[in-house]
Image 1 (spheres, helix red, strand yellow):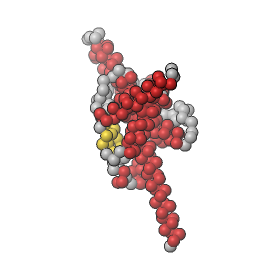
Image 2: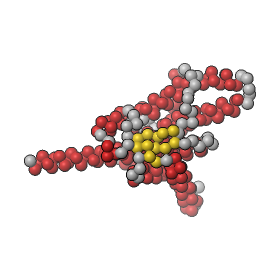
Image 3: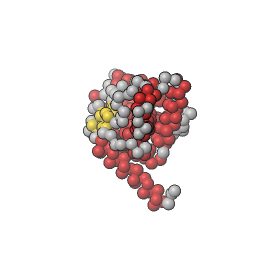
Image 4: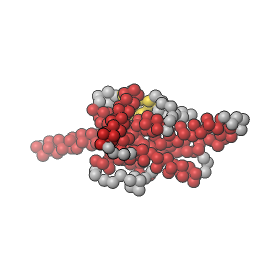
Length: 245
């Protein structure tokens, strides 16, 4: 009887530890998406866009939710609402380019801006699972590089639905599989470099820690943007004060 009670307490403690671990992973995942939407878009001189992070009450998260997150990241625990610059994808970007530019040369700049937004949306999707992967690597004192954390590995970090949506974008980009793969590799490298940047990672970490300590189920756009900008400013000021170039 006593042994059973001790065993049950150990199992319960392990379950709580697992839940805490998953909450941390989710926090970094969503903080990564949010940092991409604000900081990556800003760096690419794209317009600001409204978004927010919505969390399920962690007290109501079940083992089934955790399993679903591990396998599909199907928004069972958290999601970023909004944040996409392109809401409706064209059937073919090539067709869209021909249609718009054949009548008006001024539309060329518009299409260039469209492609910048198109690529940024994909990069921001990839930043989420990459941020989760870097958090796991740092926690386990392991290396974080593109060979160990490749595109296929993102499925181990809640990235299945992110990759699926990225592929939806890419199918409108080109009907040629090789071109899609080359473009995805290019944008994956951009996402990896974003996450691996010290200033960006400091901002992602600050937001993730805020998420973990916040009891609210919704964190609004203004609060997120303010925190990310504050973190970047603090990082840059610290570099200036230490004379680091």
